[in-house]
Length: 302
Ligand SMILES: Nc1ncnc2c1ncn2[C@@H]1O[C@H](COP(=O)(O)OP(=O)(O)OP(=O)(O)O)[C@@H](O)[C@H]1O
Image 1 (cartoon, helix red, strand yellow):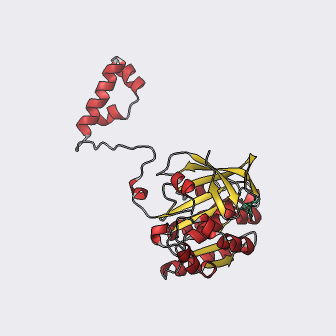
Image 2 (image 1 turned 30 degrees about the vertical axis):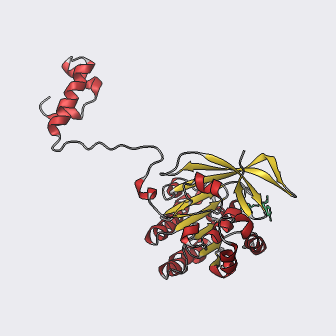
Image 3 (image 1 turned 90 degrees about the vertical axis):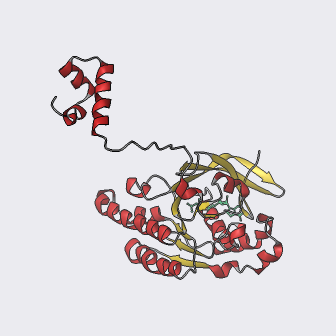
């Protein structure tokens, strides 16, 4: 062994064989060689689970429900892509609609501005949106009713229907969404759903082209979110159906599951759901039980 490099590129067992030294002595040799090569003192980083400074102080978009906001530490991060995954009927669209309303409140009530809602598969549920609007005073008892009365919710949701990937969704994201965000007219983008287009447009054999397109879409939403410090919510029916190319661009992944149990309240009943943080740099892996009521998605307290 003639150089530090030779020591450092050898494995512990090889060094033991070459030198006849004991394991602790070989470890000492490696430490000594590493210290001799180091020109600067090492910096110690303390990483704590659930702590991420970049998102720590950042702006959040509240959901309108204190239980969900507590789970999400204030709501959706303004600079990041959140994926909401779950089976059909789980209530993903309900949460997407609710966020389109909560974004319209003043910042002190957890809002930001207006919303852009991009539908790919199903038509936009306009009737349900109208019901959610009329039920806002019941959901948002924290906001003065006079303020709620002044908000013109349906005037501040831009709707787009993107029926295919390249001609519609990519054009919508790169042109219309970018323009609305640059003009400051919108501060939330919901895509409902990304997976639907990939499911319908690609056969299993087209994986290379599929991954290429996926990367294009995922980097587009990522770019929009960071460039304009805007929360982007991507609703997907199954996850992680889109694979690694997609997963790498998502900041937060949430999963909404419909459970067997039912909960009742007055004349209403709802299937119990569980909203779970699958991963997020600033959140612990945790969950809350929720129900879908006339006024929207709300945490169910024990
Ligand atoms: N007016 C309402 N009052 C109470 N609950 C409602 C109301 N409208 C819808 N829901 C609940 O929301 C469910 C549908 O949720 P949603 O459309 O968000 O599902 P999803 O997860 O988006 O499904 P998909 O992937 O098929 O679009 C219904 O099954 C019902 O339980």
